[in-house]
Image (cartoon, rainbow, N blue to C red):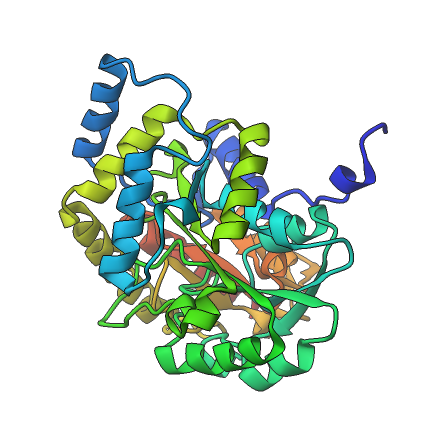
Length: 396
């Protein structure tokens, strides 16, 4: 093979692999309930689609500034001020081709060869892969199931070394749905500020929070903390715009300037039409978002109640995003169709035979769980959980 060690070291995405396998089975006429979805199952709101059409009709198809449309960056800065009390100059906002792209940009700008990056586990599976590409070393800090998979400030403190460069902080979390309280975030910030390390705060699910729980950004803790934080967000989850590929980051001016320079060479600019659509999303009503969130919340409650009636399984109630970590370790050591269950990969493979696609927790750094998404219809959730219960009964 002639590819570099850098690119060859990247692991394939298990979430995409599971989704592809489920789609292939469906194409063969098999019935599969797919719990692997990492995107809302709703269409983009019509006023956003109309804005994109209008932009096309008006010829808004040329290059934009590498950092994004000025009007879009201005609106993002306004949103930070209005919703979180964070004051950013427009020059500190960089629009990219999705939040994933923004995460890569931030790490590429700040992580040197050999730098350690602390990642709370369970984690979104892309984080360690990006750290690897940037030459960094991932250091995992285990979250506590009894505290909704959240990390403890003392555990974080123990993980910091002279080589630590950054903490990746994701609240609300993918895959756990955990949402850190303001008090918990302030305690983590105290450790981070003392160590003088950077924080990459991934807040892509910030508007998908339930039952009165509030989102609080670590950048809100203090001006000192804000100056060592890169905040990442986007339109994908909030406005059902995953395929439009628009995300952004807010960073200290020097970092934002460096990222803008790099992005100008890497991608020129995010897609112009998608930027106009994102601007319409931020300028428009959030009525559709509220409806979507209410439906997610209804599914979440239904799913939790149904799982708790399946003997042998467990779940930690999520406060945000649209995922549940299903605790399946009581199945380990038992057999299904003559095969021993050794971990979450086995559970995922065996459930697929029952027509249920889930993502093994080992992909997220927790082999005791599998991840289920409730970004599917309530009817499919019910059917899928019936199949999971049938599988568990066969195992026991």
